[in-house]
Image: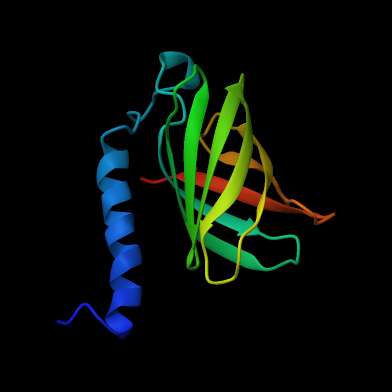
Length: 143
């Protein structure tokens, strides 16, 4: 198969996703771990959201440790877009600043606020800079 042409658009995101998955799996907490056990929220997640325009989306989020205590690097891969952010976890609340890394639709940035549930699901709102309304997201640990 030739890597040029229409296949290239499919192969590049696939290679990125495989690379992220391989790295992220090594950092996943074990089932039954809690925030207090030190496993934190590191892992690979499935995201379902509704943006401020009421458009539904889904994708994958990888959460990995950052340099500081209770800091996490986050990367969203959603419908042809890659976004990255840094979050700080205080108790069960995760506050994130994010920006678009690559997208055919242009760049954006914003903030997100999540509550980490006892079930490991992150639920919250996501804001885009310059837009008054907030979207919502639910982020489920991959099983």
